[in-house]
Amino acid sequence: MIYQIIAMLIWASAFIAAKYTYEIMDPVLMVQCRFFIASLVLLPTFFKAYNTIPKAYIKTMWILAFVNFPVVFLLQFIGLYYTSAASAVTMLGMIPLLSVLIGYFFFNQYIRPIDLLLSIIAFIGILLTVIGGQGDSHINVWGCLLVLASAVAFCFCLYLSKDVMKTMKSKDYTNVIIVLGTVLCIPFSILLVKDWTITPTFKGIASLFYLGLMCTCFAVVLWFKGVQTSSVYISSLLSTLEPVFGVLLAILILGDRFSFISALGVLLTLGAMLISVFAPLIKRKI
Image 1 (tube, rainbow, N blue to C red):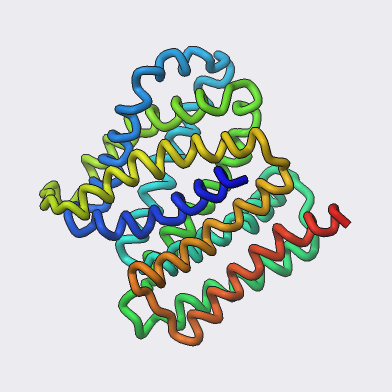
Image 2 (cartoon, rainbow, N blue to C red):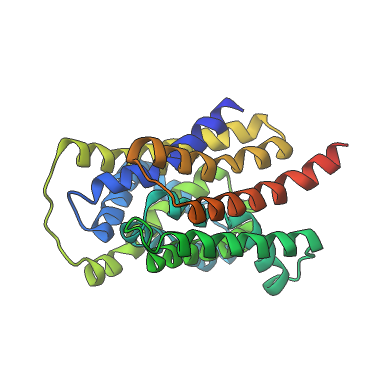
């Protein structure tokens, strides 16, 4: 369990580290450099891992790498550039509910009435977060929408990757998808980077390597190490910690602040997410 808690804390801190890297480079360039750092670590075992992909799923792996990395990460971190870390991580708090809605509308999954209600509440929470921040330069509608779009893309990947992950070891899957994602991100970087200038500072460079090594590689290893010894029940509970940790870190480290309306929106969004995950688990336990 402790491995998964540490992994959640590291992932939650990614937005804070990214804010520091924006001081030295373009956000799109930051994403590409982050992937390069992670890929350099994984490259020695990449080809061995790639050969473990069943032939029927090679095309699917390339699609997953494309959506998980160029699409999800660019949307997420370009959005973060325009809005606060706390509001961005609040958008990611919608992932559990978005996965339920996407499963219902696109993958014929059953949806509980309570999840539909909680989705409406969470949506109201997002509206309040954005509306309450309109007088605050730290919260931006466009930035929040981009991060929310990245959450939607990520949820689609959760469903599309199910069959592939049954046929591969988790470490091989992670290795392949990161390296392929790095390659696929290059054309987008060439098109979208507005400024190729890098103004190095110790804090900015340290944050970049933290994103590449800790958030992209080490946290994944910790998470799967914890999954091996924890039940699905515990893993589901712990996965809800990321947006909570993220908001707290943004307030404590970056000094992000909310108006009363925005704070109410954050509480509604995160509260709906927590109830959505905890309610069935508690019911099953009882």
